[in-house]
Image (cartoon, rainbow, N blue to C red; front, side, top):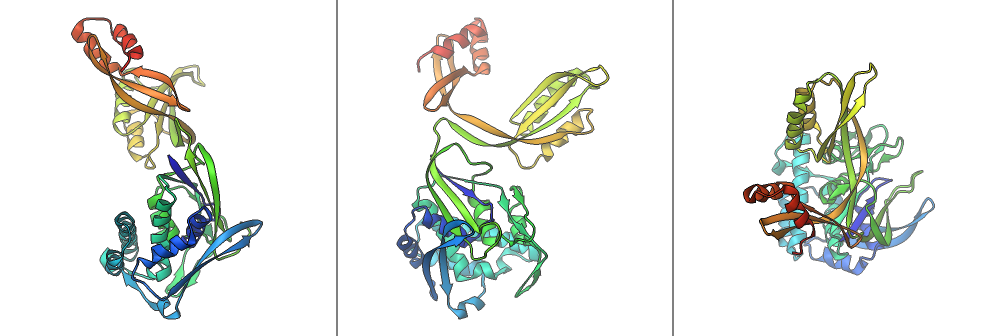
Length: 388
């Protein structure tokens, strides 16, 4: 799978994302041809190599006429532009979805219906082109999966815009990044713009470390400002390593020494029903010499609320520990295997192109073994080695 990793150590904006895409191989002429499919005028596009700190990067300039800076558009205006364009349908549809999402967030911030929102900076020509350009650029480079680092949102005292004072990060930016990993670096100003937040939050399939991949290209897209941290976004493109996917998960754990052990089966079932990936119990010796158990819950969900509701509601604990862990998952597939006693499912795992494990589904094996009155282990042994 062809994957793109956005390394947002200096934040992200529309022009930084566009610059990284072009630096990673999307021809500037193709970018201009994409823009020409939208019925907009009053702008010019150019690109140049610049230096940001010690790094060389590509800066894409969308220079718009002075009159265009005063134009404000609402959601209907932008949807009409996209519908009147000759963009590929999937690009237009994704761009439309992004602006609907932005209208919902802006409406919530200002207390108005999404249809009544007047986009200011994000309704300008350059921001519209940024959104469409990033969607089209990912498609042009054949990107099938997008992974993003935790994002530097900057930090400073509030800044003044033409519509008044604004905190950093802005309210819409922060709302768009709900559930996503962010961090602040003081005195950098606004490093994550609403356009950048919109594109990353909606287009990234996952946030976390660089996935296991074979790197093909590394592009650097420059922002307009200069800062102590080079104001660039790094985009790494390559093929995801066959046989594994890499990501982050959270472990929620607590140590219990005063609960009836009969309850653990019920607690485990409730946690799995609430979305836990795995639940384990580890026996331990407690500080007062009493035997206890560490209850560990693995989850990829950003919202831990449902799992915590089960833990605090169904156990005797009064506190939990949470820590992030790196997780590598082997590529797997499920196949149906015919046995002399009936068909069962078998999970097959691959590591770097080689089958390393074949695991029959226990419940399937139990079902056919019970019906045929044969040992379950006999069915499992047969299913493990049988040809499909």
